[in-house]
Length: 119
Image 1 (spheres, rainbow, N blue to C red):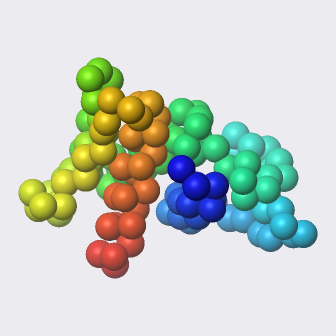
Image 2: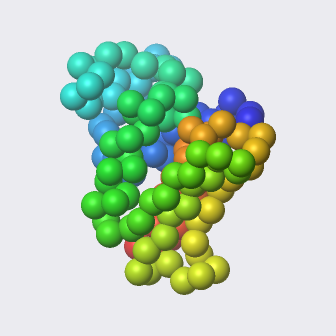
């Protein structure tokens, strides 16, 4: 995947999580407990590669009363659905070519884009 798309998607996740960040000479400071205010470039956001970073995002989605199914196997699939999601809006990302974290990250990004449109 294109680096620019990864950065934009990770920024979208950071905003969804309400992680305050500020730009400073092409760097951002993320204020969240498990980073201890470490200085990051946007390219260093790791939601697409780190389960430790992605799991709190999944927890927030569940806290909003949406269901998440992560299926490791033939398709490495992540499905997000809930009361407000009609059948055509069920988010399902999976492929034998994708690692499970990539499927999950892509489903999260797609969910956040949908969720932001509902506001």
